[in-house]
Each structure stands twice: as structure tokens, then as C-alpha cells.
Image (cartoon, rainbow, N blue to C red; front, top):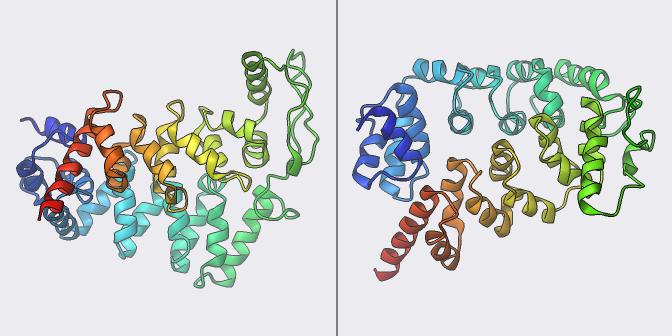
Length: 347
């Protein structure tokens, strides 16, 4: 089997236990990058021995080789997340912070415990902060944040978010409708705490079309404002926005409900980054329905499905193992998990 096929088949759940074991121990013919990605994947393997071997192999990797991988812009997010959570090395964490591909949710979590030099590096990335404003709040909560760091946070808040609103509301006024536009007038000046779109057609199809046109006419900052403070109907549209920075802001809305997260986790029209972020959130995945929806959603990244599938009830696992609408890997893992439970129950 060619090395490329090994990784592909592993991620799709098609490799037998003996080959997975060899990969976990680092003796499979894979490039360092593919081997690392495979071992991170196997760290969540249902066979405890394989998972333990993968974690041991990862812990024994040469730090310099790991850093080279973590600096690559195409480094797999799961690899960045694994070392961000498990490594205490400053050099490793610096590489993760410097990589623009690092998930913002990981930086949010790290910002609570990083030392001042690392916090300064986090605050250097203004684009990431705009995408994930909770980073600023977590930096302020970090007991290691020095007065200089706190002052820098205040400067960023003033520069990007205004200094008169609580939290991270975008203060800049909404722009006027473009000249010559035939889009119906939108109540752009209503306060952010009461954002709404009135006067829309009652017919669902026409309503959604007009809704989409009105939102598409907004500037980037205005879209963020609506994603954060708009109505439930607005969030349902903006979670599908092709700009992932906008769709991610929906998940940070202070008005979002558990029912909405359940709905988003089942959507096939959202980006995989949204599903990854939901799956990586301890708060969102407290809901069994969210977990169930993510595992059943074919758009969910394999690493997320692999980690969550073991939380499903046996009844749902049985249905999943026979469900032809889900990826082969999901059915394979569901069957494997069922067999594991059956063996454990017979002991």
C-alpha cells in the first residue's frame, strides 16, 4: 500500500487494527508530516493500546521536527490543537501562536494561561482577534498579564471595537445603502441591541432571497455586528456565510441558544470550520443532540467525528452502522465501537 493511501484509508476508517498499531508505534512508511497527522488521529482510537502507543510516539518526537511542522500554513488543525493542548514547551507554543492557520478557539483557550511574552505574540495578530474577540477577554483574565499587556488590550479594544460599549460590540455605524442599489431600504440605524429586519415578504422563498440581498449589501464590520447581535433568523442565514470570519462570529453571539447550536450541527450547508468549532467546544458538546448531529453530519471533520462517536448511545450507534447516508468511516467506527461494547459486556 502506497504511503498516501495509508493515511487516506486511516482517516476514512478502513485500516485494520494491526496496521493502525504499526502507525501508532511509528513504524509505518509515512512522511514525518503524514505520520504525525496519523498519530494525532490515532490518539483517539477506540483501542486503548493503539491510542496509548500513538500518544507515546508523539511525546517522543524531536521538538525541532515538531516545530517545523507546526509552522507550516497547511499544518492540519487537529495537529495544532493536539500539541497546543498537550505541550508545555514555549518553542512549540510560539510556533502554534505564529501560525495563522491555528484555530482561534485554541488561542482563546491558551490565552488564559500563557506568560506575558506569549500574550504579546497573541495580541500581535489583529486579524485573529477580530475573528475571535474573546481572546482579549481571556488575556485580561490571565493572572500573568502584566500592566503593559493590559494596556495593550485596552488599545486594541479602542482601536477595533470602540471604548464605550461593553464586551466587544462593533461601534462603527452601519454604512448607507450603495448608490443606485435596488435593494429595499434596511433599517440600518437601529441600535445593535435591537437589530432586526422589518417589512420582509411573508413567502419563505422570497423572504429569504430579500433577506440575503440585504445582508450581502453590508460591509464586513456590519456583517459582524449583525452576526453578533442580530435576530435568530439573521443568525440562521449568516452561519452559512461564505466568509468564515462572519460565520464564526455567529457562534460568539451572546444571544445564541442551545437549540440553534443543535440546528447548526445538523446543517450540511455550513463550512467544516463551523462544525469543527462546535465539536471542539466543551460548552456546545454538553448537549447529546449536538454530539449526535455532528457524528451524523457528513461535513463534520473526521477527527471530530472520531472523538465524539463513543459518546453515542448503543441504539444510535446501531442505526448509524446501517445508515448509508453517512460516510463509510462513520459507519465503520460505529460498528467497531459496537463490537467493543459487546466484547466488554460479555466479560
